[in-house]
Amino acid sequence: MRPDLNIILDWIEPGSRVLDLGCGDGTLLKELERQKQVHGWGVEIDPKRIQACVEAGVNVIEHNLDQGLAPFRNARFETVVLSQTLQAVRRPDQLIEEMLEISGHCIVTFPNFGHWRARIDQGLRGRMPVSEFMPYSWYNTPNIHFCTVKDFEALCRERRIRILDQTVSDRHQQSDSLMRAWPNLLAEIAIYRISR
Image (cartoon, rainbow, N blue to C red; front, side, top):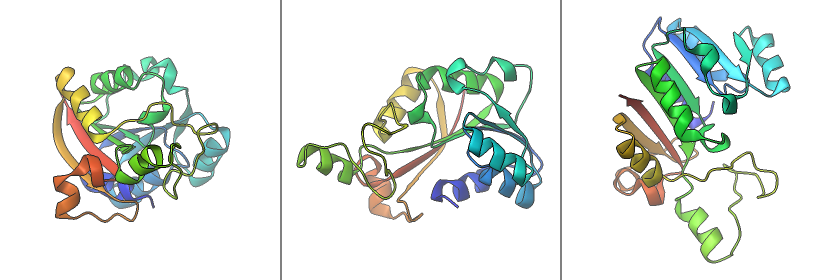
């Protein structure tokens, strides 16, 4: 399981209702159902991933997040999750606002493009970063918004969004005091729990 998913598991209450935006193959929802008996729904656009959800018994809805969350406005969820999808939507700021309308608690995770390896790739090599964790070239990447820890926290301040919890890790789910002291430079993955 991806490193950020284990942290998300810890932050979600047993038996709660969860909406997972950009749920992929349903791995997180399947684990939440198994470990915490949540009532979960996934939202996905990729047909192969939707099929994987169906085969795994995960409730999934085909929907493009760039079209907003209007279909979910009348539903209430204890938690809305946006995991490794923030950087792939056209208006991440609007999506976060809509998430907070649907639920009082949201979890957002994203790759930190301020990580030192990304800076070296751009600064010394003059190239967009490609790594094991971000294996795409500039021309085939789903990432259209490159966000750093500082960028996300600035957005939260501007929009008066409260950060309830924040943690960072590398791609191996490791974190240390140095990484927590300088997350914008040393973290590969940022994980936030936010609210109004």
